[in-house]
Length: 75
Image (cartoon, rainbow, N blue to C red; front, side, top):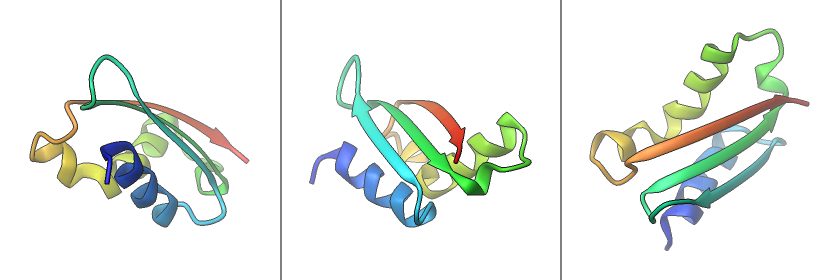
């Protein structure tokens, strides 16, 4: 399974009913994630990003993901 697919599945599990797009840029370990979810309602940008980081933190901690660019949107 490609890393983009793995991250997409983790984020889709964390944001059921939301929209998730994941793509690689500048190498396979540099990812961009766009997540639309009602879970972001009323949350600051930092809080939104923490919600996105949480399900993939283990992949960041072990070096599998070197960089993760995040875009969040409220549905």
